[in-house]
Image 1 (tube, rainbow, N blue to C red):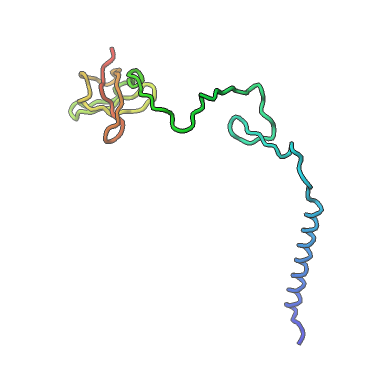
Image 2 (cartoon, helix red, strand yellow):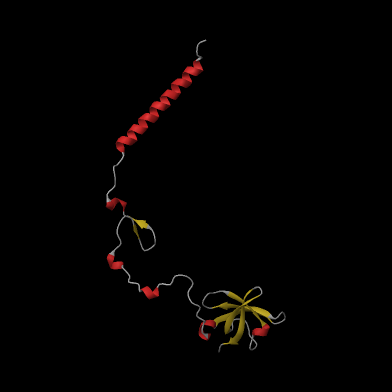
Length: 148
């Protein structure tokens, strides 16, 4: 029995693929670079941590003391009273319910304040000094004092 037309076509297609593959392999062998120079292999890291092919500018070099480098968690330094105290403004206060909110003047953060933590009567838009502690539901102002 003779081969069918489909078998011949498939065989021609396979031979063509083998020939193409052999030609590609030969091209790769001929065009391969034997090696790169040292300058082509060097990569630099810029001040942002990105790789670059150009060396850094020596004028931007920063000297770092070995003692200033900390590996790991820095030592705990307790905050002073001045660093704990913040200034803000009463944005809302409801005496019937006994709570309100203070807007921190620096971070613009809104902080909850309870009537028990006030040193006197406050009105909306009063400037106050306060400390922040973490309450059950988030940051909470304590030791609230009215600024004159």
